[in-house]
Length: 258
Image (cartoon, rainbow, N blue to C red; front, side, top):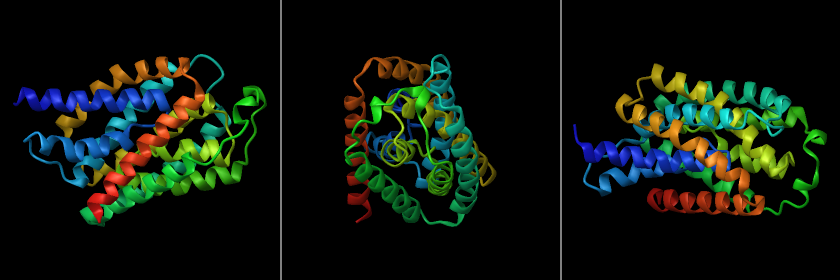
């Protein structure tokens, strides 16, 4: 077994999982392109898009668990929002993950690129005064939240992502949830989504287990560290970091597609 390969996958997992905890995303927005492009650029065998989506699904599952555990104390987790969006996104991700087996490699990449592009556009929409509302007074449209979560679930199930990179801008821009509550709650909703995605990917044989286990170990180590740093950072800075990361990823994906 190539130690250099193991270290490479571990480091990629640590980076993705740290960002997961920091920004309230599952990490697939980072891990998908890193796993797709970095190993072959270093001379290792390339993963297919289906393999990357399967590996990412398992990584997101454990990164989101780890992140939620780190947020368990305090009032950042909105239980109502978790239930409404969690059930809807789980249902959607089951549909998407089972259906993804019949899609081509390029189709999976195109779906991922479209999701990243939509998320990037939403992150640059002005978010005025969302952090002025006390956490205990936060309200939201339940039907809208569930409907959007179901749609996100279908797309995230296809690419093996938890959908956190889309959930965060939806919560901030559409549902008007304060930033820190969005980050914590989106991790919990992402956990529901990743359950459906993981079941679908395992059942349809799209998971490479060794790199998945390596990424799981990285998630358990790095996601809580990201949470700890995220709690201390200015919310505007957190929003900008996520916006830039999503935009860079979307540009890279579309350059390769086109």
